[in-house]
Image 1: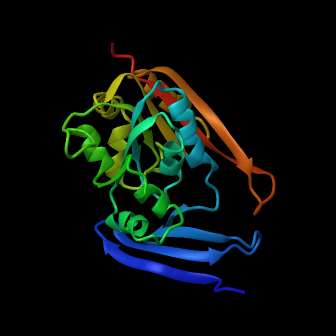
Image 2: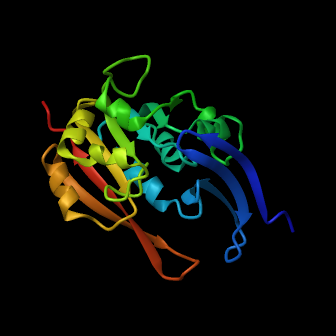
Length: 238
């Protein structure tokens, strides 16, 4: 039997200490990669259905060919699912934590080679929320517009990683984001919480065609199922 637990990397960042760990899940016997930021579990590849459906649902609602932004690299599941879509012409993945990018570029995480090896994909080190409020997500092309923005950074609009992120989930914050979408472009957001009528109302102040899709998947650890939410919204500016 192989090593059941290993810390693959540990670094200090402006947001706190970040670590990448690999362990064998006792219930399934499968390897699991996990990321901790301080004492908080930030991401895991134990359950990835919600992250993958974020890309599938978001891109299904958009036209093509597609220029796409993914906010939050994580372990790469949203980005890899987006790249599996042949209509994607370009993909920018914005990640605030430099070590996470280095794990992908160095092959420390399973999907790193797939992302780094696809010429359509660029990993951008930056603050997604500051970019949304400013000149956009492409450092080489200020105010560039995109066909879809897929966001998976905070746990939910009501459970943010940093207090300053909360300003994004307001009408003003979302209007700033909409400036970086082409007419008819899609904003899609992953949430670990059930659908929120209040956040849906906020989205409706800025976007059209608002939907909240519940993504349900098996939970072998506790039995039964678990679920995430994917919000979808269309930029109606013509």
